[in-house]
Amino acid sequence: MELKSDARGLFIEGMTSSSELADYLQRKFKEEDIQNVYDVSTKDHIKIARSEGTTPLRKFWQTLNNSYKNTPPFKCGKGCAHCCHTGVAATQVEWDGILNNVIENKINLEKVIEGSKRSIDRVRETLRSNKSLDQVDWHRLVINQPCPFLSEDHACIIYEDRPLDCRLVVAFRDQCESKKLEHAQRGVVIEEAIGATVIAKIQHDQTPKFKRRKFQGVQPLKLLQHWLILWQEKTKKKK
Image 1: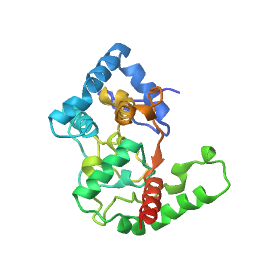
Image 2: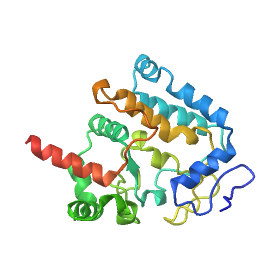
Image 3: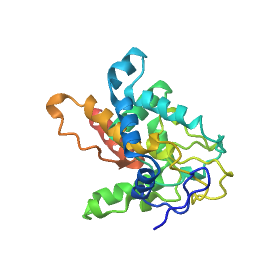
Image 4: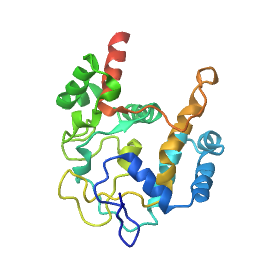
């Protein structure tokens, strides 16, 4: 299938799978350039982050944010939350980053869970079922439901530590008019081509050596609703 983009290389037109974006990026950027950016982003990343008083993940978020500064101005703004009504998945290290944000900003996760009871209950019921979880379309369970971390004034309460899923949905053309993401653009900067792998590498390198497996370039993903369920269950066990 031909992937469409405008004269500036902004990719749009009905992308529903992350593999489509990956294919587009592989065709847009040279393989050696992608590898060079990956090498720069992961070399001594733990040591560099520590020297700057931050985490490797937040350091990468800074890199991604800076890369977007060389693109056309964002049309996104606080209060525009059309893209926040879909399934958002995160790795363990991204979830850990969100929990750090929760502690720093004194966010009550029990209230977050209560406010997203509808979508969380759907995920909870599926987890308790006898279904083959590998075959479950997790995103369909929560589509058109607000993200658990979306506030009443349509702002993200963990914005500084939002997952890659959120960061790769931006708008440069017009303001969004629906929740179908037809105004969202991806495939804009080369860092998008390495984002998931860099995050996987960060998680791998932060894992104690005796628990590490051979680095495969990917890490398991769970919906934010799933992570919240696991957090709640873990919290109850401690009481």
